[in-house]
Length: 290
Image 1: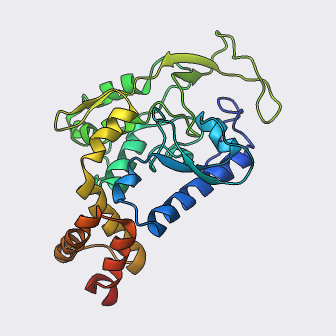
Image 2 (image 1 turned 60 degrees about the vertical axis):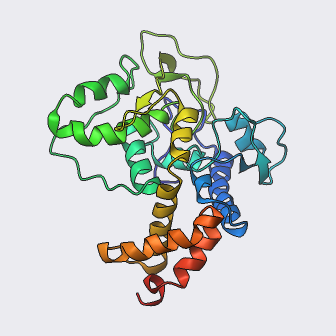
C-alpha cells in the first residue's frame, strides 16, 4: 500500500489522505476475515453484496448512510460496482503506480492472483507508457502494441480483465474520464489535500469494454464480474493453491494437483467455503508433510 504515492499533479486530492489509505487496507483485512469466520463461498472473492466501510471509505465509494470512523460490515446498494476484492481500493492502488493505471498490470494481477493462470515474462520490446497529457488513451496505445505478434498472445488474455477495471483511478475512485495535464487546457477547480490547486483537466472518456479469449464480451466491471462468477471452481482452485503456498512456503507442483482437486471436491457441497478449504488443506499431506 505504501509503495506508491498519489501524484501531486494528477491526484493531489488523494495526496496525504492517510484516513483513506488506512480504511482501504482495513477493508481488505476485515473482508477476508469475514470470509473465513463465516465460511462464505470462495466466489465472494470476485463479487459480494457486502464489504467493510467507514465514513471516509464510503464517501470514496459513493455508498450513502455510513457515518463515523469505525469500520463496519455494510450491505452494498444493488447497483454498486463494489464487492469482492477486485474493486477494493487497496487492490486498485497496489496495481497502479500513483500516476497512471495500466490494464496490463491489473489484468495480469487478475489472471494470476484470482484465476491462477501463469503469464510468461514479456518479450524484449518497449513497454507502453500511458500519456499523462490525456491526448490518447491507454486502449489506443495498447491496440498499436498488440500489432506485434510477440505481444498479442499474452495481451489477449491480460488486457480484457484490466480494461474492466479502467473505470477506477489510482486510488480506486470511480471515474468516467481520464485526467490529463496540459498547459493548453484549464485545470479543474478545487484544492487537494496538500493545499495546492488542482493542476489536472478531465480528458478522454474511459472505455471499460472487453472481450475474453473465448469470445465472451462485457461492457463494464459489473458484467465482467458476472462472467467471473461462472468460474466458481476456478476461483476456488486458485484460492486453495494460494493458501497452500502461504501455509507451506512452497509452490504447488504438478504432483500436488490431484490433492488440490480432492480438496475442491470435498468442499464443493459447501460452495467452496473458505473456512472449509482451510480445514481440508491443514488435514492434507500438502500441509502435513511439507
